[in-house]
Image (cartoon, rainbow, N blue to C red):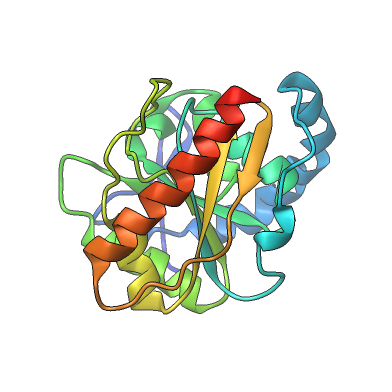
Length: 209
């Protein structure tokens, strides 16, 4: 997939707009460890049986788009979803000594929010075309308020370019719920509005459970 540099201070790969984003190599090497730790994750976060998990297609590339309440959401999601997940998240988390290595093991595709991440997004689209699954939190920030934040267009844009469905997901602590897949057409705004409605409805249901 290409070369990568190591930061001597953090011992983590340096991945930015100038790097080759060698996510797959790290993902394949460390994901087995994550799977081994899933029982511990379920215990720590009190993960409940997922609701409507059958809405996730068994094969093919797809995006899982969820609300975002805390940075550990991705671990809860991986503990209930059978597919190996790649994770589109902010690059700054890779600087955290422990958390950085944890999210890297999940196949973190780092996004620097201060610049246009054309290379990262192109890499993600290529992963989707290969049949991989990427989880995205389109609110763009952790939010525990009564209402969801407006969704950014990254999820629907990538789904359109890769011609893959988006599976809406809602999460609250150890509770998860999944909606029927959304096929993104030419109208990204319409698709984003539909995604917001689906996630928001499930989120409210979880918050009331």
